[in-house]
Image 1 (cartoon, helix red, strand yellow):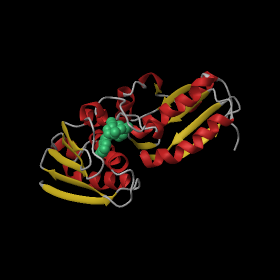
Image 2 (cartoon, protein in one colour):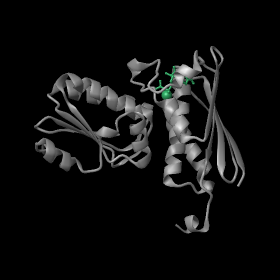
Image 3 (cartoon, rainbow over the protein chains, first blue to last red):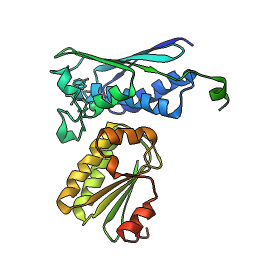
Length: 148
Length: 117
Ligand SMILES: Nc1ncnc2c1ncn2[C@@H]1O[C@H](COP(=O)(O)OP(=O)(O)O)[C@@H](O)[C@H]1O
Ligand SMILES: [Mg+2]
């Protein structure tokens, strides 16, 4: 099945759950395993949370935009904000690196996104925003998994 | 959502439900920090058996409480995470705190009785 979607929402923390829920519905036709679903949800949650809190400082008015396409075995997705941007992407992607330690961010977001996706890339410009792009492959639907 | 209980022997039991993300973690943090500073907490037991989802915000929450406990030498137990959550704990160096057992098993090991509510 081929499908494509775009979803935008304002930068409030409540929309982290909205994003996970919408994206979980989107991938249902791929008949994902429980682990595939939870890894995919985690990537979405990390990228969306970053856009809301780091990109927009939860301003409640700027938009985070998700775009996704799907074919029979994989989902390609972008999470975009037009917010603060990242000074040094390489450093930001290091495990345990966070610019908000006082808010108890763990700095593990990018490490998790990289581990749970098949391809991940980050583009960012200070003052104009960040785009996180990733791909996740899903195990093909077989007769046994359908009956499972 | 979190249910927080304290035993007479200083074990803080945090049972988590639903989805633990940044928004949820911010709500639970306040409740927990006051519990830790108000008593002599010997250990925090996080029971994740009923938790459906967790992202790196859960790591921030647990590491933060480990920091609160450090001056008192308190221990941290993370019980029954899902396969995906266990991977996240491993990336974060917390695999040594993970156990697959019941809260009662840990309580027996640590000593103590649960307060009647
Ligand atoms: N969308 C974004 N806009 C601005 N900065 C970002 C964005 N995403 C990530 N960052 C920066 O990268 C750092 C690391 O991100 P991450 O690994 O998710 O850890 P954490 O969110 O716990 O800080 C963040 O602390 C922040 O400085
Ligand atoms: Mg993050």
